[in-house]
Image (cartoon, rainbow, N blue to C red; front, side):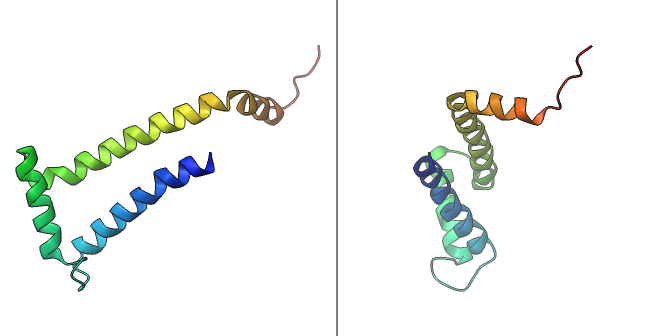
Length: 95
């Protein structure tokens, strides 16, 4: 399960780190605003959409995919989650 989470989070961390560093024009070639604009212009041209709409679309897709991944993990661990939930609830008084 850790491997799955690492393989899920590592690309996200790399992409969003690059995105925000290049958006703020950190003066390296890889993190320059010119490369940032060029990359999204190329993707916008390929997709036939405005390049400014691509980052919000990526963010929405990542939120949806994260929810699906979370649901799969919760389903696989449902017995442990149910037991944890039962232990957290206070004991019901016996009448």
